[in-house]
Structures are given as C-alpha cells and as structure tokens.
Image 1: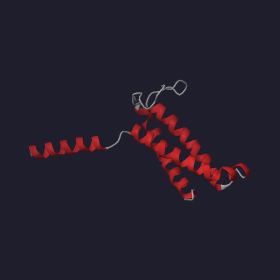
Image 2 (image 1 turned 45 degrees about the vertical axis):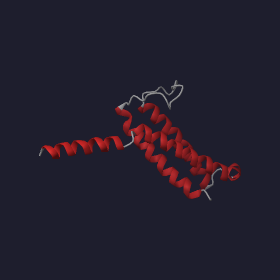
Image 3 (image 1 turned 180 degrees about the horizontal axis):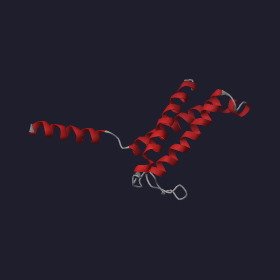
Image 4 (image 1 turned 30 degrees about the vertical axis):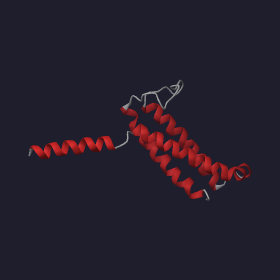
Length: 124
C-alpha cells in the first residue's frame, strides 16, 4: 500500500510539473495568434482596405479583438495594472489572481478558435 501511495504522489508531481502554467499557455497562445494575424493581414491587406466587410477581414478584426482580450485577461490574472503594465511582462513575475482564472481560460479558448479560423483563410 505504501508503494502505491508513493507512486501516486510521484505521478501527481510529474503531472503537475509537466503541465504548463496557465500564464505560459496564455503567452504561447498570444504569440501564435499574433503570427496568424500578421500572416492574414499581409495576405488580405489590399482586399480589406477596399472591402472591410469581407469574411476574411471580419475574421482578422475578430482575431485582433481576441488578442487584445487575451492580453487584458493575462494582465488581470497576473495582477498587473492595465493602465500601468510592467515594463517587461516576459520577465515580470506573475502573481496569480485566482478570481481572474476563468476569464483567462475563456480568452485562451477564444484565441485558439480564431487561430484555427485564420489558418483556414491564409493561403500558402
């Protein structure tokens, strides 16, 4: 029985250390979303200037809004002020605000959906 308890404890520790923290997931998602937005903007820039209501342009604008929401949710979760954010968020320690966790998870999920949509409109 003692071995089972130690095994479960070791697996739990391994599982917890193998899973990325939510703030790292948010940063990775924000970077991926930014790359997808830049690619889509480069491809549809002229079309969106002339026809901003086109499906592709609407998706790009939604993605930009999702990126802003993700950044704001990350700032809220990490306890950073949106009016005076830290000078370098990449090196500033995140102090989790648990009440903001659901909002951050939602922002990450929305951003991931829009990454998929952007991938669908960008031609290689």
